[in-house]
Image (cartoon, rainbow, N blue to C red; front, side):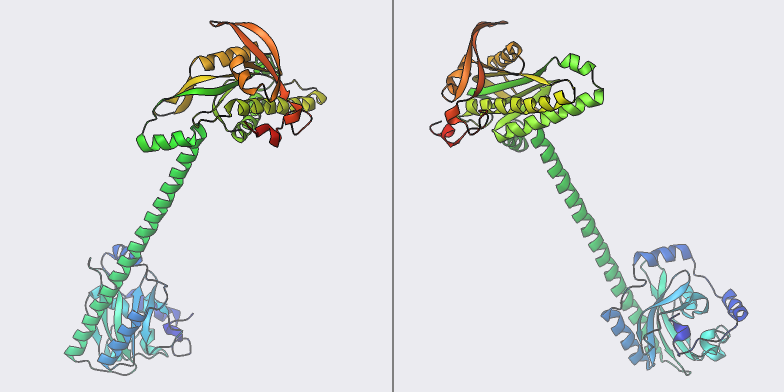
Length: 441
């Protein structure tokens, strides 16, 4: 083991019983548990050499005219050397049981022993009787502001030596300077730890803020979320022209009765997630789902002159997706998911409701009529109001249904939206628009 025992090049030869007898008489500092806690708070043990402390040992040796000096700390089981002058590079520690510095930290004052061989406290120490053959020791304790001696600054010699009063006082002052250095080091470590915690807390706060904003954007349009964050409220707005789409699944109640609850939720989630992708691609804003119903709007909150066209394209893509899915389910003899779609164009009022759980929603007869259109639609078809038909008739093939009785509205002219006209379609099914579709729109 590197340490005092190997400093002279060979292990000290001593018997275990002699070491035990010597250790039995070693004093223990008062408030030892608190002293060890204080030592740990400085985080000094087993750290790399530091220039500032090495220079103190150099200065101590020169002032005292000694060949060696060291700064060391005493923990539960050892004396560990932090800085040294005139000692072998491999000397890093020795057992606490044989440490002379152990006595120094118990006295909380300079320990001056001009001739170790003649001092009955130390003349049987392996450090004196062994190969290291120490003959002189003078150590000053390193005392914290709370009065705990963490270790020592000591000078040693291999022959007896006398120090003047001034030399001993200089050693005492250097020990205090060592503690100033250690205290500044501890404060710097504490500051760095505080900064690390602050940085960690800031990163966590930023992550939580980003997550909150992400969740907010999941339920509110970006412009509405920004307004809410800036003003803590959202001003209701009137839009004189927007297009509302409502989708639901016909026979959903009977379908639910044939499926496990988990399967129902999972399949609805898959459908609505796909609807979300389609809506986003065509610039529609999803508002909410109610059971098996899916409500979205175009032209809100960002006005758009193509909102009716965008909604019609969305509806065709939704039904195309379900048609492809149902063909696969039919092969597996699984029940089909049959949707009805209602679309209406007109004025709406939009705003945010709720204080803890925000909802961006729209109101007005345009929304109510869209619901009636959806209820009046046949499964697998898109029913549009006359107001929407005027916006889309030049680019889509439609089919008149004539006046249809609507609750609380009387007779309402309705149309079925079938597909994009061939000259404006980029595919045989009339689902994907070509470049010509958007010219002049």
